[in-house]
Picture 1 (spheres, rainbow, N blue to C red):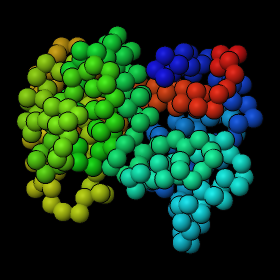
Picture 2: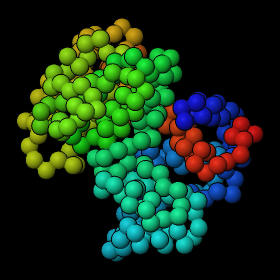
Picture 3: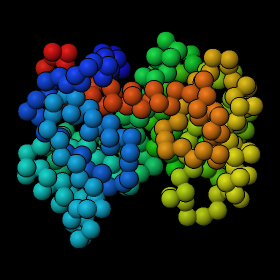
Picture 4: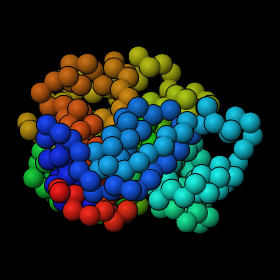
Amino acid sequence: MLDTADRLREVLDRPIKKVPALRGKTVVNLFYEASTRTRASFEMAQKVLSADSLSIAAATSSVQKGETLLDTARNLEAMNPDMIVIRHASSGAPHFLARHCRSSIVNAGDGAHEHPTQALLDALTLRQKKGRLKGLKVAIVGDVLHSRVARSNAWLLGKMGAQVVLCAPPTLMPPGLERLAAVTHRIDEALEGADAVMMLRLQTERMTGGYFPTTREYHVRFGLTEERVRRARKDVVILHPGPMNRGVEIASEVADGPYSVILDQVTNGVAVRMAVLYLLLGGGEAAA
């Protein structure tokens, strides 16, 4: 998957960003949650590969009239798409559709469960910057409790031989993640000798209680500042899945600084989603 994304990324640097690999294929983007990077990069990937696409937002669909997820999917399937890309607030929604639909189903993020294409683009970015994944120490810091990005990255990077350390306040660290990665509640410990640091946004829209006193105190205890970056390796890279809360989980000077690869992640997001579409829909020669 990463090798394919590496090859397809070259298409994005061409004067004419278009290849006929998926001409004649139809993809439906079904987004029940707000999204900028994921939705735009999937749509861009589909256009570059010459697939026909249809994007539907739940806020402007019959979901607002009470239509169920399954009924929506069945109606879309009646139009014979080849793939449905879904983002949903409920964990397991893509798996549910996969059991009931003929189309290929791609998970663009489900609840606090997983975000597989984000983990793939993060892995691609790290491999490009570090030349490898095996043996890297990667610190993932922030709202781990509500983060599908943290779960997918801990699984994927661990599988590829990286040492993953999850760091969050006790109230934002779910039990059981010790099976996936090392766990700490001290950011300085997580950053010590890290090759890469991934900061996570506080997902206040998913919070129903008091997980921390104030965002100001959270920044003092768990925010990534220039001073804290120095605890990591000199060639550390800083990642963030976005959107960023500047001054909360990450200082602006760090987000825009020389170690940041945040915009590289966005570019690689298009390449990885091109690879997902290409490999799952069985296109022809991508570089044709």
